[in-house]
Image (cartoon, rainbow, N blue to C red; front, side):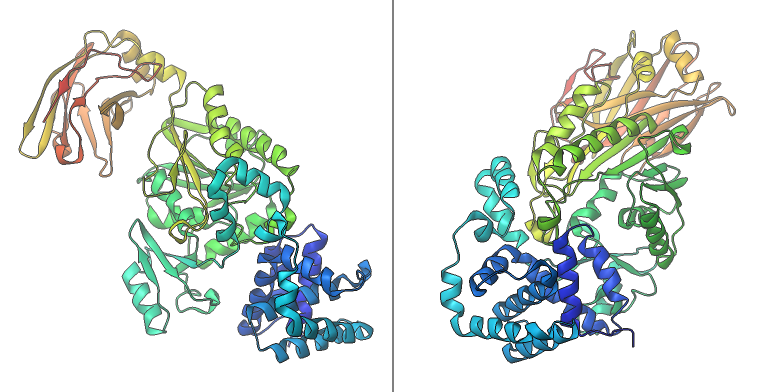
Length: 581
């Protein structure tokens, strides 16, 4: 047996270390688990600590009222033992007599035999005077909301009356979310497997890989975990892969990849990626990420590096980049309750600088036509809406896309913000940008003579016939591998893109339709070739060509505004016409 101390003694040591500052609860639990063999004991350890941390400010105040004088600093493990005991008694985690007896035993195991009587007296007094003691607690915001004062001020400033919802959600237990490894098992198969073991898991309509479990359990003991058939990942975090719009052949970068959940999800969702790269500044966390990927039988290029510095990664270009930025974590407190103790108001300024520097460093790594998803686990406006607004002001070649689904959270000026507890999801603020590098915009700036020749219905399809005349500058850009981009607007919003590229080795044009069923067609300079999915590109000749695009009209709204090209300000660059259904 590895364990030399009772569970409550280990819990007291862990909470005492956490209150001293430094290590996170996740790291401390990793260390504690090495001393505990039984999975049930590990589950009990977590139940005690999470209960104490969710009410830490109340229990600290309660303990002060129960002690005639504070315990000396050298007895911080006994103080933590008492806080844990109060939480267990108030919440009924175990029978009262068992909590008191086991806490006294733990005090002796910690070498605090002289204080074992004090532990017994304090906990028994709470049993006798519980209602009066709780009623006498000061009605301060910190005690009422169980959050530090600085966090309360920021929440109320950013969210007004909705702040009370955040406080309540952060103080409640979080459900467990699983993400099925769709390359190894279907969602319904995993659901049935869990049901056969008396574990009810509910699917979530908007997340195709997610199952929610409301009962507390040790996920490592679930059937299929060791075989890599699923992972633990909050539902909100699973949205990242949806926003990335992954497709075969793409180069993808997860810029802050540890602990690897989103990186693994990318590989599971699209095994045909040309490359999948994960970078994290912490080498130890990269090592843990590699171990987690191995359990899932997933390969990825992993690097320990600071992307704000010039590295080998700086010379590469990626079609998709995910920046799950370092943040305050204020949106996942119910899942990481130690944040309310470890995070300080003074930390926010440094985090804002880091986020800004990472955005600046990653933007040049995005390939033409690429997409960058910025996400945080924060509810602070400065880290989300404010950070995005500042970036868009700095980079006028960036354009924000409204691609975050409307079911997710509440709309902000930039992106959408999910508040803790919404649909059982934790916070995940997202915003996407397509790349518009200056050379591409210059190439597309002067589409002389391009027109929309016709727009008509054919059954359920909308058929567009676009006559595009390219300038010498545009053709030169194509010859140098710079794609020209066409855009379809629906009610003033970009609904779809079409990228035109030239492949000099094959002397062929390649047309990409940017939708859920992306089609690639190849057209020779010499002759007209019928293309896939009713997309036809005619002979360009020296300086002109035409594109016919069929779109399913049932997915669109009328009237439609159909421009041939977009200019450097992302406005219409050619005459357009309205077409109504």
